[in-house]
Image (cartoon, chains in turn brown, green):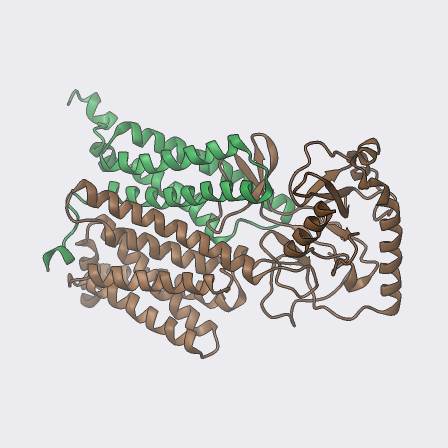
Length: 398
Length: 145
């Protein structure tokens, strides 16, 4: 737990993904969607009860179970998928305040059950199923592209619906071209949904202040932002001045290398040069010995020292927030770590996968950046990419 | 409109597997694109990882097609692929439990544990094995073809 003992209660739009931390909603089920988990479970229990009633000779139940058994295996799966999506949408209606969205959820739920009914009663269903599922998936992706973050329940529901759509799109003939077209459409749909999910997650999250909705892969201590006290302001200023003075000499990467920082093969806009000795020296937040230096490489190849990064040694150890809300430590979650070769390989995708041959680090130790560039807006937070590009262009120009 | 109600020809449990593999293929293609984009944004291309992810996508989609054609090799490859997904999911689950004191989230539980187990279990069913031309051991012991 962080030394900043705040709670998430008053911070709308944030979700506690790991005890004591808030993270991107993409990796959790937001509280408004809890009801949908219950309704989908009730749906499963309901089908079990229906089956029991059919076995005990209840005629209406037996009729439905017989209709289900008359279906082919893929269409049985389709019935399950449509029913589950309908149940989830009922839960979404219950979990949200009345709004245009909840009305759409109600319509979606009704339509999913209507499709299930058509399927079970051997009425024409294929075209309607394609149309309604496509509309539901596109509706969700458009909200993601509009800046809404996805959550686990949203992605789960859309996975169900894409699978259902893949069944509904399967051609009734064995023509190769049609088979290929239907398969290709499914893959394209999956990619489209994945890209939209990333877009929503990144456009809705960001920032390193308490109470912010973090970007995917970032964990912030739970709690709301507040004004720093005079003492915290003074502590933050002192830490900043001491660190900036201490690391100024590392503007020359050779000096940094001589001090033990790994500056080999520097690239990109956020190259982290680690000092293995400082990372394991048991010293925390020492301006003379930051665990990592951060560089950017300008277009002309000039390395530019951006700042330093302090790091805690153990996972779960809270960094000393000496400047209160001004010096907020963060951790990372869902980091993909390649085993071939060992390196950071990105973040867990909205579908829950890391690239093949990599594992998921569920949480890292806490860290805090300190930026020494003149004019930087947020000294302990995040540097805006655009601002950094302009700064580097100016450096390269000079 | 008869095509709107009828089943696809020869629709069996194997087609359920085909659909699930297709979904996994879509996920793998998305992962491949993500690896390339991460490389493009960070300037750090991990070539073996890109090749592995691309191979996983191609193999999964090939397996989906192969299963539809009742290819025994596709069935065997599917077992290996699903087994690998399960092993990595287990590693991630253990890391999550020991480092973060939590389990896997909803979507990875479905895509990395439930789906592979469902696919493997379906492919092991006697009727499905027969579709791939694999005669149950009891039958061959009796000397039947």
